[in-house]
Amino acid sequence: MTAVKQTTLRDRVVLSGAGVHSNAPARLVLHPSEANSGISFLRTGLPGGRERLIEAKYSQVSMTELCTVVGAADASVSTVEHLLAALCGLGVDNAVVEIDGPEMPIMDGSSADFVEAIDQVGLTQLTAARRYVKVLKTVRVENGRAFSELRPADRGFRLEVEIDFAAGVIGRQKKVVDLDPTVFRNELSRARTFGFIRDVERLWKAGFALGASLDNTVALDGDRILNPGGLRYPDEFVCHKTLDAVGDLALAGLPLIGCYRSFCGGHKMNVAVLEALFADRANYQIIESQPRREPARAEHAFGLRPAFAPEAN
Image (cartoon, rainbow, N blue to C red; front, top):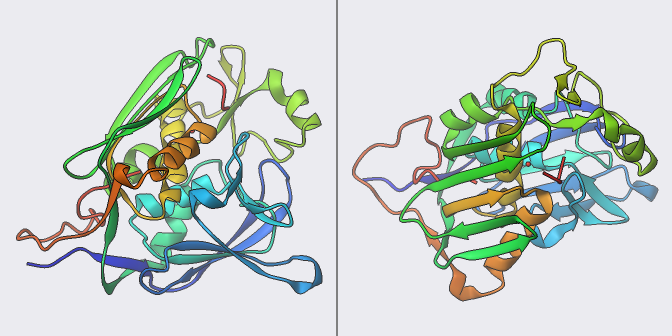
């Protein structure tokens, strides 16, 4: 009988690229970290050679328009959701993400390159038992017809994400997954961000999507997909919204045990439902993984299978 142990990276790994919104280049280094340290961002390259450590926590979120931003105005990191989804989806409990620019590299618009980087160095177990946030009471946030909620569950974490776009190429789609590393790799990790050509000029004027291209975004013109290769999954749109939810909900700071449901949600509502959860101590409980008789399957690094997505639908 062994308890599920916390993990970190076996070694450091380096990635670089440009941000999808800022188009600013950035170099990031994923570092191993000690038990119970969680995920944090080390923002370097600040004026005067300053550095700032920013916890990957919902309480550190400063903006949720089109992406998730952590940190204050003078030291922040934006578009953190795809990397956080990869770390969470593969069961990485502790890591320091060193980054020298204001925005995470968009890579190909999905989590695939981050997964590949993590796989390149692999994971190692630490001596401390993994801890979880167990949802005890249902919490729900609404915005018009849209909603996001977290509900109790005996074990694991289920995502039930539904979107409804007027564009016929998307329409109404729903994704239901019990997240573990295998499911994340196979069903979510390669789903790319997407956007409509009609919105490009407005986004540029607002300072967004300056680095967007067919190399990192599924571009839609009415009901046409402009990318030569088409979609990676038949339901890639809702898969990406689910991937975003995995990354945003990782800002709980610990893997969740419960069920997440959303309809026409997005970054703002993902963070808001975490705020609602942690607003009352009666809504949740911090628990440690318990000893179990069956050996853990290597691909289910979560042990109890906890898991953790344009904004207007």
